[in-house]
Amino acid sequence: MKIRIATRTSPLALLQTNQVISLIESAEPSSVCEIIPIESEGDLTEAPLHLIGGKGLFVSKLEAALSNGDADIAVHSLKDVPALLDPKFSIAATLSREDPSDAILLKDGITFNDLGKNSRIGTSGPRRKSQMLAMHPDLVIIPVRGNIQTRINKMVSENLDGLIVAKAALNRLKINYPNMYIFSENQMLPAAAQGAIGIEVCSSQIQSGTLEILKMINCQKTFTATKIEREIVAALEGTCLSPISALVRARDSKLHLQVRVSNQDGSTIIEKETTFVLAKELEAVSRFKIELLAEGAQELIQT
Image (cartoon, rainbow, N blue to C red; front, side, top):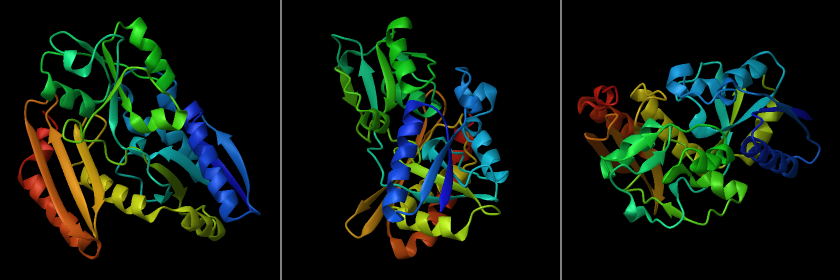
């Protein structure tokens, strides 16, 4: 069976796609995979996402390839996929999750505790920005976009004291930055689905045989966790402008959900968590979403 795989063209995207190919070929040795490289709109500019259309820019061209029948599946960093998908598309599988933490790369000679008034921190994400400002309100946040190596290069060109990146990207690309601090979840809670690779399909085009292979390579633990996290973002009608963090962890035989939302400058935060058994997931998550909305979380992320 031939499987055509749409992917962005960055080194990280291609590495993740080859990871998917390796799993597919192991699960079904007769499979023949073809990479369909696509430059997404989000990769063609370094302008802040909220000014050019949001995270959907990273997936729109790949979804067009799925819808047109030019590709069978699309591989994404799942955190870059909007939580509210067009109903004809779905996430059919996820791979085992990498470390979901955020990390800050630091200028030579300084530590995380040295950061303070007027320290220049590179990040374009409202979630990271708001949580950094909650810790250090007097930081100077510098918008930085591009693939991870492009952003690292801006440590010098933008005279940054620190640059916030996903630990998963560093791990996958085997980047061992010499001066790095890894945030605890109490300091900076990750984005929904951070660290997860998602495989998207179009229901009107996908073949049943391909779906069966995707079921074989799916990591159900990651699939369940990221599905819940993305449901929280969707319930709050979150966008790329929304400072929303959500993380599900397995604890013994239960799931623990932690959510943090804030205003843009991190001066006001709502944080909630709950623990539930998987059999009660629908009931527990539904109740949790209602409570978040009742506490004003949706209004807060818009301020």
